[in-house]
Length: 204
Length: 271
Image (cartoon, rainbow over all chains, first blue to last red; front, top):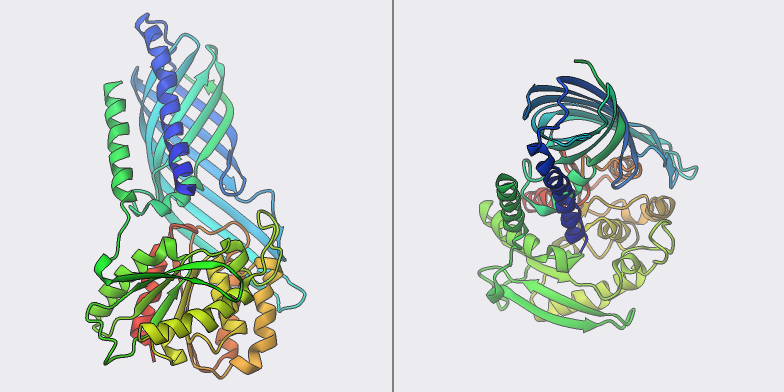
């Protein structure tokens, strides 16, 4: 049952941006789009599942052509940000650094643009936990590792001026299906799903 | 928009293909149910028989699989494959279905916090396995009566139950495959059981495999996992123990790869 819910959320997120874009495509024909050459978009967000991770990120988008852009997404996530002691287990630190690059295409309306990008890069995860149960000996354990980070990103920019509002969501395609075709591994994807809100600045 | 539809269609096909559930050979699968006198629950039991099953002439080791309804086919298929790869005698794979909520049957005491509002049925569930299921397997399916030929395999709360079996009913199973065990449960209650029963259990021979996923970073899995390994390594001279952290997978995703690792460890090292 849990997996049906995961899949439903996955497809919902996948189709929402598409339907939003479809709504705007008629306006595109009227040639009233807003094309920025280079933008920089800092944001703050969440990885909502399974624990709330706080994400600080920046997106740089360079529109090579009207419908072709390259993007760079850098993020720092403070994982499990709001629950640091649980059953005498303290989270000493828990963070993820990620750098991804991607290629995307954009659809435009009068006041907004929608960019869909395929992203690929690397992430570095590191966390340390300490078991401090007074009944037992204190014990610490840590893990640090690098893994691929691949997925689809939808980025929405709202506003016509130099400064604009920015929203983006990232749908990871790792570990499922690139590392593992086992549908159970989707919980790894879900843990890296992010929703980010911020503002953007047009540089060029 | 046509392209977008194609992409969504291809993704759906990939997802559906990967959702295909393995089904172990129906000819080699037996099924029955037991109404437990220990806790009053009705358990659906499935047994996967080895290919060359001959109960008249041979006794078979048995692997008891918790969350059987989810894990039976995968474990049975892989026992078949791994035992013939080595090659060695295959086992009986015994799937224990849900009689009660797993959060009741697999937890040793009430509590746990969060979504777990009740529990504490592990002792009665253990007595069901020990006094009702194992004797039936030995009488009707030629399961070996020696402790060293009994294995328990569990994931998450099932792994917690396996750890509880190790600490509090160590005479029942000689081998333990514990996957992402919820050792944090109720302030690491199984650590207290381990401490309390250490002197009784420490000289028993046993195989223990512990596995988890590298992405299990929710703040309560890693420290007790590694602390438990260290406890067993330091205090049990006759134990053979190994652990595996499956790279880049999380709690659910690491389950099947760790089942394969655990079964390989068992078939390679059984005594």
